[in-house]
Amino acid sequence: MNDPHEGNARADEAAPGSEQLRICPLTDRVGVEVAGEVCLPTHTVWEQALERVAQRHHGSYHFDLSALTFIDMAGATALAVTAQSLHGEQRLVLESPPPALSRQLELFWPDLSAIEVAVS
Amino acid sequence: MSAMTETEPFVHPALFYRGEREYLAGTVPFLLEGLDAGEAVAVAVPEANLELIRGELGARAAQVKLLDMTQVGRNPGRIIPRVLRAFADAHPTGRVRIIGEPIWAGRTPTEYPACVQHEALINLAFQGREVTILCPYDAVSLEETVLADAYATHPTIIEAGTEGTSAAYAPEAVISRYNEPLRAPDDVPQMRYAAQTLPDVRHYATRRAAALGMHESRLQDFALAVAELTTNSVVHGQGSGELRVWLQDGSVVCEVRDAGLLADPLAGRRPPPPEQRGGRGLLMVHVLADLVRIHTAPGEGTTIHGYFHC
Image: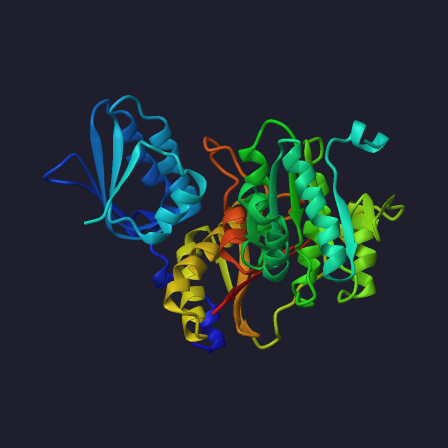
């Protein structure tokens, strides 16, 4: 741990963004399973997924976040901004979000009614 | 009303007090005046002083928002966005009256520069707002240099019941004077990072923090803070930076160093409107950390130290 040579970023750990975030459709309800990390290298993938949600016009859209290991402030912001753009009955249902995400949303968007948190 | 308050609605006096009697005489009538005028009133001071005020206010304490500053303002960098603006913005009509005591005798030499910069930044953050923030200073326990700084960060000083204009008022000079270079201990290893290695540097920092004794419940906060600081380096600091993590006086300290310049002194201290896309990273770091120290200068780049109690 204290080895100064650990100070060099190792190329084998630096996977390209798309491999660090996997987004797959859910089979039994409308939505996606999100696995991995939302951070600068994976923002594009995350935002593309959110854009597809915003284009839907009815009902609930589920995010199974049980395998989401990290989401940064920009990723949480993109989620909140998407929720703000929804109309009528549209809402985002976050399933098992990491505690840090719940905290980010509570801190900056405490009144966001279009996001529902479901803890399984 | 003085001529000054007619032109500048923001009022920011320091109250130099000696003992409990002067403390209560300087604070409680100020609060009651606000309540009688129908103003929104809040107090954020260390717990012992909070209890004094609560006792003296009696039943009227229920009309005042009372906060322990050693908790909500432990990191002085979050007082403007999370305490002062949070309260002022929640009461957008009419004058808002707040007592804020961010500097007390127990503040450490590491904390103090961030505290005094915060006091100076209040003047920039509330310019033009119909807000009064009274800042008590313990004139018995605090050092002379601290009281001298209060003259530079407050346009008016109240002492022994008398209010006077501060001739030494110069908040920008204080911000600049306490923009002190920051250094990690010599033997701390560094890790360089750029856009594609942001996840690696976060994992590395989090592993280091865990090995240095940070409790598991804090590691997620720490990881998020590291992510925000290093991402800022990549986005605003010429694409790359260096990170170091070490243990100091019971805190894990994370240093992020890059070639960028943090030109806006209020960066990270403005609560963004809910629909705004960016501008939350550094604010989040201020919320998560127990202390944030910043040095930024043209040609020298930006260094940020975030302190996290284990």
